[in-house]
Amino acid sequence: REGEAPIPIGAQVFHSDNITSARPARDADVRSFEFRGRSYSPGKRTFATDISGLTRLAKADRLFPTSASSIQYVRMLEDYPSVPITNIWNDTGTGSFTDQKVYVVQTGTKVIQRCLLMATDPGDLVLDPTCGSGSTAYVAEQWGRRWITSEWEEHPQLKPLMRDELGIFKHEQALICKALHMQSSLQKVEEFIRRGPRRQLAVLRNEAFPLALTLAERDYVLTAKDVVAWHQSLDQAQGQLASLPNDSRRRRRRRRRKQVESEMVPAGLVPTEDDTQIT
Image 1 (tube, rainbow, N blue to C red):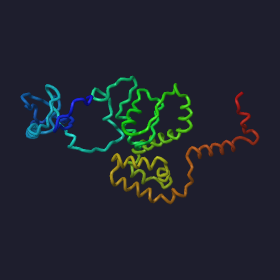
Image 2 (cartoon, helix red, strand yellow; image 1 turned 135 degrees about the vertical axis):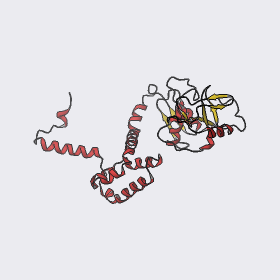
Image 3 (cartoon, rainbow, N blue to C red; image 1 turned 45 degrees about the vertical axis):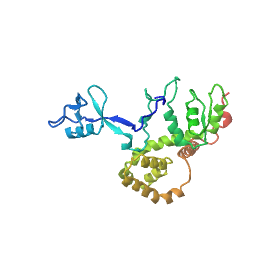
Image 4 (cartoon, one colour; image 1 turned 30 degrees about the horizontal axis):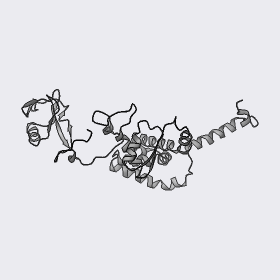
């Protein structure tokens, strides 16, 4: 765990995986299997293979006894050398085989490492205004990033810096949330096609649409047919999108609300800034 003992030559990294199935038991299913002088049963489940398959796995040393009564399949790391990383990070959980926790609010270094590698390049500056145990600085130093860590109480001037200079990240965070929420809508291509041109244009004009489409392609959320359909719709609407003014929905609502208020309130009764000041 601490990396003090050398790994034996020829050792391989593996993960024990389930070898049973939840389907109802049949007459031909194996109810008990002898392995290394001990009998193992699937319990209330059934083995996922027959007796010949279990025998081949035992000869290939691909069975791993996890307790006195159960065995699992040995899945080598070399069996699947690469897998796509989605937005669900099951491998970053904490436990007895991860970082030793020496601080109350210590964050696992694997989570910080993944975020840092995705968002920065070597030599970039990483800021952690709530450093706590210093895990951010530790990971940044490991991967060749410059870093600044502090605490709000020690340096109160960081508050206006985060609010004024780095406020743009709030918009980026909201954009990512919109894109993730929009992925489920991208799977309904037929529903999008049935919509009228105006509603289709509203979807394609959404500022989160390009990012949502990119994330959906990367995470294999869409089929190849759906990806082609979305790109075709986007290409067909490029002319209309280019002719639209670059105006946000919030600005349009604010302008419409002011217009309605000016039409409802008689002239001379519109409150001024002096009238609305609180004394």
